[in-house]
Length: 117
Length: 107
Image (tube, rainbow over all chains, first blue to last red; front, top):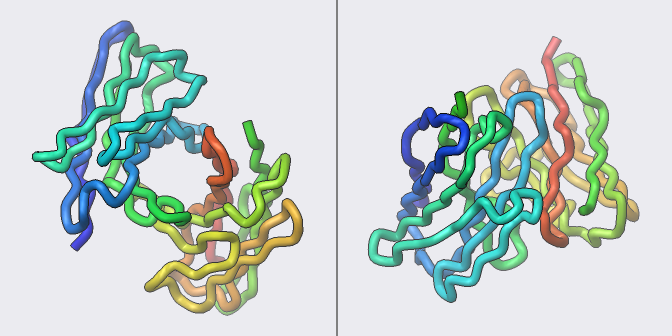
């Protein structure tokens, strides 16, 4: 079945970087864009960016001021999201989710908790 | 950015009740609106897409509608399993944005 499985929880210090992974299975990797979204305590969901695994085109939220990079490994069917220069406000649960063909996020990863402390 | 204003923030209703949650977009998003259900500690699950299309596997008691830039999620007959947080999301343009959420409690 379709699955997006994310890497485990991370604890980082301010100024550090974190790289999260999202391993996909059960569907054609290049048929769906993969997006990253985060949910910080007490705040609404925030969209971070996306990648087209086939073309490697990416787009990012301008709110992150160039701190985020999304990449993919086609052989491993895995998408990565790296966030640099972490701040306390980056503490959140980070989700990957797939999107295709006029539909929104029909499948999500289980989430990865990132704590900046 | 497109602002999504969702109401109410909390909602308490009894089993069998009909409930509605509303989301208003700050500008036209056509019908590019989704509704998600999220239970504690879990990822969101897609309920409705393109404002009124029911995602496969979602119970028929869930429905969505649109009137201009105002969107509504309706649960026709509330069940205990519907206790959750609900979010709207526009995917008309980047950055995709979400409503602040509605916490639905079953009395």
